[in-house]
Length: 281
Image (cartoon, rainbow, N blue to C red):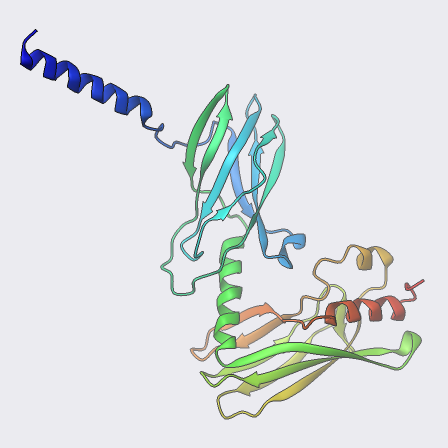
């Protein structure tokens, strides 16, 4: 055999070896299998969202791994409970922890990558999941509004005082404001929740409080009462103490984020609702 022939055979063998070791090119999910990004009420207080996988195909699909990349997330959101099988005609939520948000990141679409088992074969995939309710946008907007606000003022609900007794009692939530020495922000209002509202009426608490570097530390008081008194609402509470804070940032942007609560404040508010509604046993 000539040297040229040996070289050609060796090159062909090398190409074949490399081809056998190269993973399959990521492709779309099997026909009928779709993924949406959602955030449930139970996710809000724990910094989580869901990969909602729906299988409209004729056969089961097994999810082996899933990683969500979002330009505004500092790292991938990884599903850590693999594997899971979605039966034909069924849907399944895969929970992922929301990573830290980067407010300086360029805009871009989420990309979901991973691996599924289909017809007995493990296949990589790469898709752009749907986000029908704008879950990612809401998550990023809230995180960046909170970050911009914190640059001007540290805001936190620090305590609850109950005034009166029985059906006439009112909870007064104290909210501390401590300027942090950078920027300016206007606190527009604190909105009610499904469980608690302003003492008078069914709305929230208008504020119109401007905070900047020279503003001294201060505190707000928000008197409140239960918005509803059924036992199911209290037992199944997910967002009843997540008061939305509406702010106007220095550039005029209106933002919204959950009011931070100091340790013990949530429990104190829930105890107040139970006592005021006669549900404390």
